[in-house]
Image (cartoon, rainbow, N blue to C red; front, top):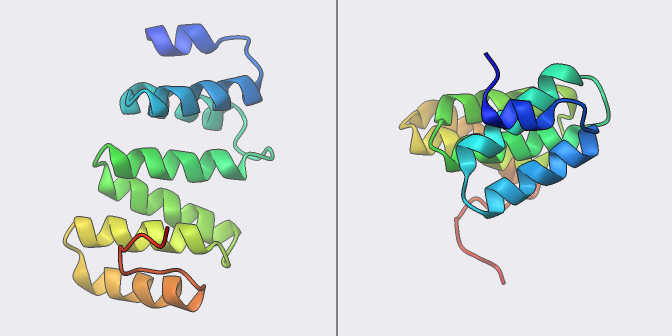
Length: 123
């Protein structure tokens, strides 16, 4: 059964779906943003949508779907082992989920990739 979000997406270009998901996220409608990106990923999983995968991982994290965020970050890292932000997101997701041992390995990877895992803002 189509939801309102998926009904709105039928026939739209992938880029338009991505941009709409960004806007939904900016409007703090995280669940609708996730639904839009999942719709996009289901229909174009192998296209040039690396940033959509990253955005989906972020949306999962911000909506406290921590296992899904960690899985999405792992998927990104499987395709791009040097993706520092994915390693950082994996680390933060695992910490927030209370998975300390796994988080430590992710912290080491994120640090090796040049990411600041301290949680401090640098700007």
